[in-house]
Length: 156
Image (cartoon, rainbow, N blue to C red; front, side, top):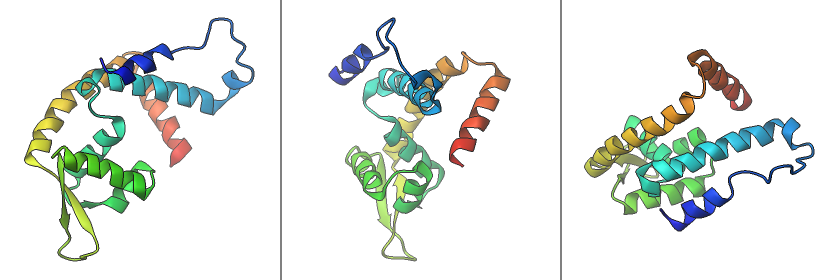
């Protein structure tokens, strides 16, 4: 287990009896707590913490959309262009993706998953399936559909 994962585990829950003030009434508080719980489980269980959700998302989008541009990734993931560049640099150093200059627009680079990246993504998908199932098991199928629908209303 990495030092980062151990540090995250120590910060799981507030102290019992701690007055949370207005926090329990705030939507953002609950969305953030859910996101943190899912993120922590991802870090613990997917690729033994060697890949983070952002890297995984870029890899999935590049695999599903060969030649996708950096600005399209940034827009889809709702992150700034500089952050996307950092994620792509990490994936490229890990030999999971490659950048290729567009033959149509030389200012644009398309992203492609390497053969090695394709093999690694298949392995990651097994971990992701187990990770997702741990949270899906807490909800009925209709509850899960409703939760996703409601969350999408907050950002669409």
